[in-house]
Length: 313
Image (cartoon, rainbow, N blue to C red; front, side):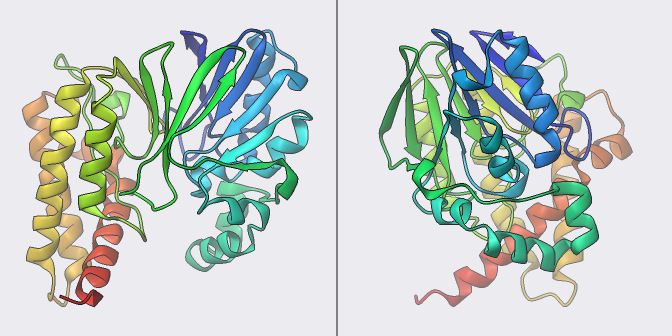
């Protein structure tokens, strides 16, 4: 765990090291988590509170960027250990935190009960009276430190990002893509958009990224993974890749082997960009790091193709 601007980066150990981050902000003797990972991360989250010199009774907020389980699966379990905290979440996400049955059923249908237990652990509800909905422009104060929440659809329709003026940074969840330290080079961070089933909307994601950049941020804190700078370059990379990915999806649509073709074409897109970026890993290493995300991006693009086709002209 590291801290800059009293922002503690916590590796939740979901799937592998340095893949999934939660954050603890400290200010004026108070604390707030932004995202929390799964219930398996609970010991690490509580250790971060102690390391920051706080008690669990000093944590005022658990702020969720969205309710996908790698970000929010442990919310109910964590809230049980934080007696004074309230949970802040997008209006579309709040019902799923109060009653996670649909979230659990949907994920179990995809992963199966054994994998759900292994990867996500217990998923328990949060009492409705402890849930605060954060509409676009919602502001809160953490020990005098002002935080702003804005609506940022594109990856999911229930996604918000959090602006921290004290550090000049956004906590971006999945809106500003993913960037793994294994893919850094002398040019800096390497970034890839993340679609994820089932609500990828490229036009909305373009607009959300533009809105984040309107603040001229010094840095972005990504769930996957950590703090990145050089934000104008990364934003341009994201915009270019979103367009390239949707073009690939349309080119693959109608094929009997659509999913396989999408996975192959996305892999080649990211490999080409990784080579140009000077990534230290060979092609096999890059594909190993990005393998899960390539699969999810292919699924997200397929959902987008199918929903886009279903819309009236």
